Amino acid sequence: MLINPTTIHENHSSRHSQKNRTREINPSCVCQNLLIMTYTLFIGNKRYSSWSMRPWVLLKTLDIPFEEKLQLFKPGLRQPDFLAFSPSGKVPCLHDGATSTIIWDSLAICEFVAESHPGAWPADARARAFARSAAAEMHSGFPAIRDECSMNVGIRIELATRSEALQRDIARFNDLFSEGLEKFGGPRLAGKEFTIVDAMYAPIASRCKTYNIELEGTAKEYLDRLFDHPAVQAWIQDGIKETAREPGHEEDCLRSGKLLQDLTK
Image (cartoon, rainbow, N blue to C red; front, side, top):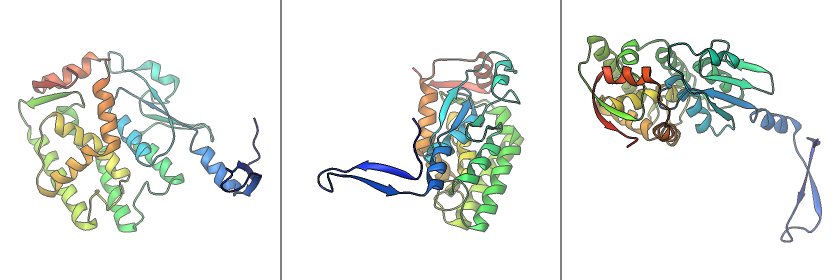
């Protein structure tokens, strides 16, 4: 059924009027509302996929409608089936049906969303510059925590060792989070509101819980708040409920140390 975007007919209750009334609205607003409902986000297992978690948490936090398509990882490093929807063969991947646009990187997806949805980045220029720098640092850096603390929301591990590289990553988290909170007043990393930079660090909150990594002072308080954020918790709880297991991901975690708890049991 085709709808004329310039008018919407409302059937008011008797409290207001028994007659149908016509309300004029801005066609551009209708178009914008239709556009935001055309997103399809392809993600990997919520148990494992830290990169998928980031744009998912952002979209949920900003209350942007999207269709979620979960693609379970198969054994092995390559996922050839993912090429059907992602040019890189990786997740996450966002399809915008309104513009026939495909975006296949977590930070690129967040930037694409920010172009159409205010609030994705901080409004203040200084806070925005800090947030962009910190988000990019997460996107390209912190290799030790990625290598030594593989993402798994459903278990708790006692690390056998902490390499010097991992300790440097942890120290950097302490410094970075403390700096953002001091400069912009919190409770989020670049001010009052949850923005892209917080979404980028959401998997770190999960990893620190999984591997019992404690930060210090205000940095610890920030990471605890991030872990408890509703969208972050929604992802984690979905991941805990998942029954699918990919052996390679599970083995990576168990190589890091001793299994203390399986939250799925």
